[in-house]
Amino acid sequence: MGSLKGRSLLEPGDFTAEERTMLFDLADRITEEPGRVSAAAASKILASLFFEPSTRTRLSFETAMLRLGGQVVGFSEAASSSAVKGESIADTVRTVGCYSDITVIRHPKEGSCRVAAQNSDVPVVNAGDGGHHHPTQTLTDLLTIRREKGRLDHLKIGLCGDLKFGRTVHSLVKAMSVYEGIEFFLISPEELTVPSYVIRDIERGRGCGYTETRNMGAAIGALDVLYMTRVQRERFFNEEDYIRLKDSYILDAEKMRGAGRDMIVMHPLPRVNEIAAEVDADPRAVYFKQAKNGMYVRMALILALLGLEEEPWK
Image 1 (spheres, rainbow, N blue to C red):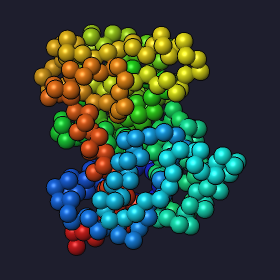
Image 2: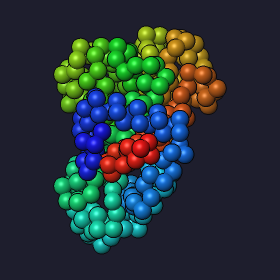
Image 3: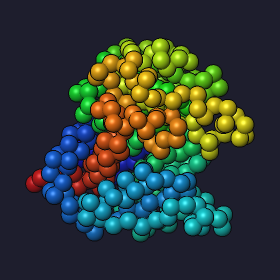
Image 4: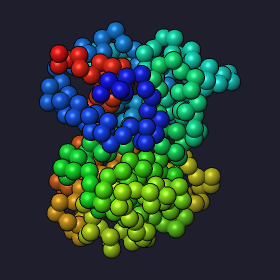
């Protein structure tokens, strides 16, 4: 586990399956004994640099650091940073690294977090870069699947909604493709199909396969996991296309009747119209558990990148 000390997390492939397993085991220990880590990161500071709006990811990271006994500095929108004066990301992270021990950054431009890491003296964690990757959401998703299904291999996973711009989908496919026997069902309108580089990740996987379909109802009965996503208004260049596509798939109680009793429904949140509120009462809906799991896995990640993961259990 010490091998993660000082490293950055920019995309799902940065950690091996074994390293992820160690993180998940640590997250399980934290969940069971949260009091053991309440001062583990005392005197440490996390810089939270969000150039793009966020609720769950930002608050999850900040809460994780506070629950570890550390402190948080940063900003929640680009307008409150020196970016409005024209400062580069490289200069921002280089400066912030003088004050903090670890940096979390979200930015609307793909590749921005890699530039940040290349110019930082402290670990950098990608909290979302445009439509590219969102690796800590992926850790959250994998931990949730492991907890709910008991495994991360030989699963049928349906990915539904915006598969073109959905960075959570892109990251999840890349991460799940290292496990054996994963079959993806790619459910989207023609205009929002998954990019070719994501298909290549599946084709390079360990016995992975995929089916593309426009029909959620036809696929749902075969699934172990249904991962819903919203159509992201902020990624569209014109309002007309967004309005036409935003309600392409709506999961409701009627559709859930066609799903298996053990299927789970996940969503990175926020949701808009794609999951009806009536589904929340279904025990197969785990998206709020998923949000809580995100806090625990980020606590584990912070400890590991700072090299503090063994301290509470010594």
